Structure formats: C-alpha cells, structure tokens
Image (cartoon, rainbow, N blue to C red; front, side, top):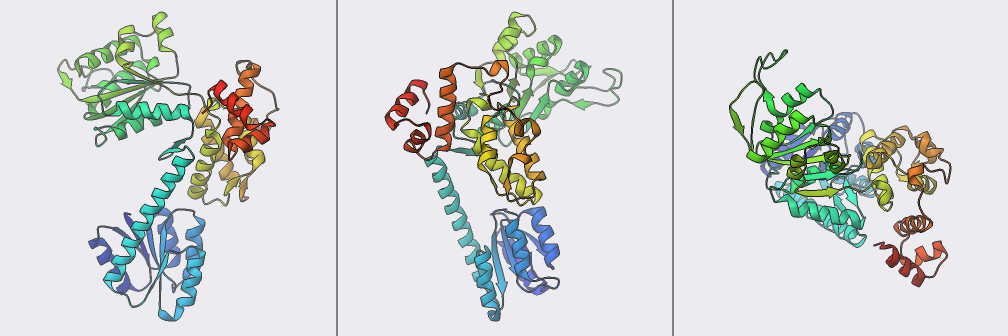
Length: 445
C-alpha cells in the first residue's frame, strides 16, 4: 500500500489526514471537489481513498460510483458525520470498504490503514492459492496455465541468478521480451537497468553507434559524443531483440565484447569495461543461419549458453481464454469501457483462430474489441474481421495436421474450458477412463 487519495472540501480535515498519513510513510494526493477527486483517481490510481460524503459540487455516492466503475482495485473509506451513518452503510453496499465517523482520532486512522493492509495481504494470498489450484502462474501481465510454459518459467528462474548468456527463440509475438524482462527482474542485477536494443530498426552504422557509442567526429553527422547502450546497461541487462539481423562486422564486435567484457566506442581506441548480462532473442533459426554463413558460429555458441524456446500460442490453447480475460479487464479499466466479460461465441472464435501473430496479436485484438465495444460483454462483432469472419475448417497449408494431432488439439481445448475431467468427457462424448488414456497417450497435462 503506497498511495492515498483524500477527497474532502474541509481543509482542516485534509491537513490532519495528510500529515498523519505521510508520517506513516504513505504518499498523499488531495482533492477538494468530486470532479477533482475523480480526475485524481483516474490519474494516480491510489491504493486507498478517503472520501467525504458531502462535497461542494456533488455527493460522495456519485464519486464512489465513478470509482467503482473504473474497476481498479482500491479501498474506499467513507468520511461522514454521525447523522449520515445510513448513507455510509449504503456506500458500503456499493463497494466502499469502511466508513470513518467525524470526529476521528489519529489512532483510528492508523487502525483503518493497518486493517486495509492486512485485508490486502490476505486477498493477495487467497488469489495466489486460487491460481495454484487452477494451475495458473501469474507474473504481472504474464500469466499461463500451460505445463509447457510452467517448465519455461522454471528454467528462467533457475538461470536468472547466474551470469550466463541466454538465447530466447520463437515466433514473433510469443513473449520473448517479456521472459527476458522477468529474468532480469528475478536476477541479482534487478536494481540495475534493463535496456533493449532493436537490431532491426537502424542502419548498420547507426546500430553500431547505438550499441557501442561513438565520439564526436567518428563519422559524418557525429556532432557530439554518444554513450552506447552496452555502457548504459552497466550492472544490469541488455536485451538484443532479433539478434539474427546483426551484420557480420557488428557480430564480430559483439563477440569480442562477450569474450573480454570490453568494447571500444566508434572513433576511440580506448577499451571500456562493463558488467552486463546479455539476453538475445530471435525469430529465426540461428543454426541454419550458421550453416549458410549468415551468422557466426562462435557468436552463436557464446549467446546460446542457455536456450529458451517460446511455443506458439496455438500450441497452448488453454492460455487463450486466460490471457483474453486478463487483458479485457485491463483495457476496460484503462479506457473506462463498460465491457466486463467475453461471451461464449467470442471465446469459441478466439480459440479456433490460429494466431499467426501469437500473444501480441491476441492482446491487440482484445484491446481493439474493448475500445470499440459499448456493451457489457465482448461479442463477435467487436473482433477484427479476419477473426470474426473466419470460415470454420479453413486453415493455411502449414496448419494442416494429422487426425491424431487434431484430436490432441481438440481434447486440449476442451480440458482447458471444462471444470473437471468428467465434464470434459461428457462434452467429448466419451467416458472418463477413455479420456484419461488419451491424455496419457498425447501427454496432455
């Protein structure tokens, strides 16, 4: 619990509360009207709100309604006079956490904040336990119930506290950058910088300068000295996104850095030493590129101390509803949209799509639908046309699979949606024992 918003037109109460809460180590934002309070809430997303029921421009219940509609987890304490207790009770039914009757003491404030902190801790613990029961792993905006992804996260945690270079491979949009960031956050260098280098976005000379830096006059247009990202990432992590696109000269300089932990700026022969963890990512097959002399073999071995392969989204269909519902709530909050859930037909379309853009495409589709929707649920017409109008059974050549593979995919989808093995068996029209054997045959967790 870090931030508190105070909404009250009484300056004395604001001052009293602000001083006491700041002494408790909390950041305090104040507002003296309902409109100002709603704006401050949307901007700062506070953990706790102290809200007076009597405001000069509106009543506190209207402000509370706006706060609750934002779907941001916060704890609202209603500040009220004794004569308005009935209204305070109504506010609690609307979603307020507690009410604070005037006059109040500093001890009462301390008690309320500590109680909120305990409740928040218990709610987080319950949510964590519920996720464990459902097989869900949640790391910020990254979440999965796929056993395959569980194994990847386990590997990422194991290597995070080492200095080994890591190569993350997989199709575009599978979450390579997200895993790289998690490894950094789990590492001893988490207090240091995490800096991304886009190896596809710049011309060779500019990319070399971006990575290693340059001195004034090193090349035409170098009008002042520049610090490279390797130097900026000292005591942290540098993430080389799409490392396969590096040219041979830059590959050679990067190899020298990985071997000796030093490099030279363009135009300056003096070596610079830094302590940097290198994580690289690619959506191409580097081993094939090595065979074709497009990528240095020695650099490949230096980068590939630990390899993590990110599976395609269609290989973990059980994650599609989980990711979609998570981002639906996130985008609804951020854009103040009324949509609260995804209807069954929409979920069916999401799970039947092949997702060539993987998780990134799914997130973009959910954001689009959430922003455009004016209903309380996401329906097929809110989806992009290529998903909404897909023809059942129409696949690309690379998506054509054997009957056994199709059966495996369908069983995995049903298990992801069903509440139990018995329920899944009923949907599939087979008995639970047969389903259990098929799970074992197809190695479905």
